[in-house]
Amino acid sequence: MTVPLDIVIDRTHGGRWTSLRTTAGREWLWRREAPEREKAAPGDAFVDAGGLEECIPTVRGAPDHGDAWSRPWTREGGADVVRCERFTLARTVRATIDGAVADYVLTADAGFRFVWAAHALLDLSDRARPHIREGARTRLFPEAARLLDRAWPDGASWVEGDWPEPCGLRLDRFGPDDGTAVGAVVDASDCCVHDRADTLSLGLESDGQPVSIALWRNLGGFPDRHPYRSTGVEPMLGRVFDLAEAGPGDAARVPASGEARWRLTLTTNCRCA
Image 1 (tube, helix red, strand yellow):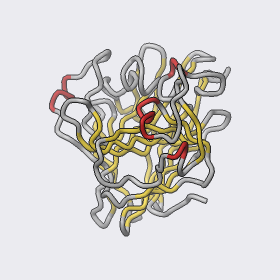
Image 2 (cartoon, rainbow, N blue to C red; image 1 turned 90 degrees about the vertical axis):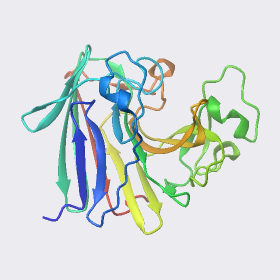
Image 3 (cartoon, rainbow, N blue to C red; image 1 turned 135 degrees about the vertical axis):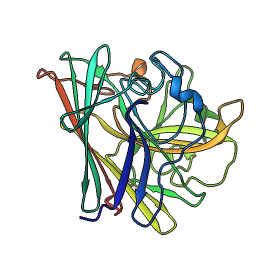
């Protein structure tokens, strides 16, 4: 079988996906030089080297970008496995006719709450556009406050609107650098990214868990010192970046069985409605 997406994984450094390349030679994952990543240890501030990171049990907050990215993963019985203090995560990746599938099993105490994101930073032109179902409810976070068509409510952790233009902020295009950085969480399970003639679809399935698509549109607005461009499309379990801000239904939860399962699907065909 011809493999339409070739995936390279660095198990030593957080199980990070370092390459997602098509047979035609299109590399979808963005990367940056960050030699300090090789020395990162649990509890360290996140080191952004690009690629696709496994962020769990939170993205923002503590620990920064979760507890799995800074730990070595091992190969066990066909799966990549990471063991953290409160959970074990196993990931099995396999090729399909039109892309790849990654199946996840999280083992932890029943009731354990978490947020997970496939933190995929994509190498996109300024013409790239994410396609998500029209009208999907979309949460915006405080960094977007000055870009909205209304005042930010006092004390609010987020505001909501409808895709593709929640609260007057157009999100269905990445565009050229403009010095802004915005994160959003969209109530959807699929996103198709169109960049010129190329398409990448990312989809997420999980019974009984809150499923979302997170977007990170950093057009040279982050970090404050030495900002750079990075654009992310991140299938997510949960509806917030920071687990500490999760209200009822905003976080995934391990059921009585002690195992939570989900599937990430990537294809080179658009699967969005």
